[in-house]
Image (cartoon, rainbow, N blue to C red):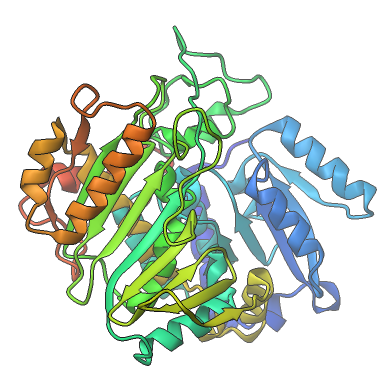
Length: 476
């Protein structure tokens, strides 16, 4: 039986009140032997890693699993049972959140569920680890931060690089001015993405999936993708393209180096879905410019190979999926989730940093201490980095296709944007894409008020920053 939204909120309010009365002490809600009892919500993909990593942590018991696909759920329960772990299965997360045998949840659902699931979990008195992006749009990310402030729960963002001691040391090295001021903070997501194909008609939903629950706050429309469980990333109703999938990891580290604690005041994106024709909506090639006062943050997404007929991807300063911090006296390359290398202006390596700790252990330590300051990736930072992806996508979605010469004319005053666009054009030419024939989209130049996180006098952008929700799955 499904729980009504009104009944759920009534119970959630009681749970929140009870948490307040007990000062939200972890020791007062912990399970037997002071274990933290955790439920994993959504585990066909990244959630499977949650189960594996949590199983290796001390003082933790996985007590429940939740997935709207009964096949995935049954297999997950059976897999843990073989390892001697008995868990309670749930298809509806609202019923899971009523459980008194759960202290915290981890969320690895599709993007459009992240904020709502996290808010409901905190309202039910649970601590939360939520995967990136923490939101599907700008507005609900701000509501997620507000819920944390209101309810006082511990909530961690799934940006694992924040638990890298190597990257943290590199950030500190740059902030101390060792290679001068930052000129450009560049995030790279050069990751192969093949066509998802074309369908002549909507496809049936797999019979094991509760599609109403899967769809949740999004419009209830039939799927147009052969691979149901992953290719939702490339549809605006559910995903955010690769900038909000893999790219947010790099976007987050690029913002970390800059030390920016707000959204960018000006945004521009350029790109398209090029190289094949399929049912997907999001771009496979995108460059996004966030015009911070200190230095620009540039995000580059490439889903096509280095050139036609090859499998290998491009590299920029030695990185394909990573970050390059270009400074007055050199640059830093972050090629993975844990390390960084520093070079001088002549390309000579000056120093390197390496090291990583468990992002889940960090979350669990904060659950025990009840100190948000112990978290490596608190939710406000997760909201900001997620929203940088969303505002870039808004610019793209409000743009129009133009010739390469017209685009160059409009960005010629910005040397960083011009050079980045020329590199993108060269990459596309290497994939036999003629930009005179297959034109890219020049996004709308957006102006945002970082203080209010709104787009003044731009109702089109405002509508994409806060889309409607499908009752009863409503973020408030």
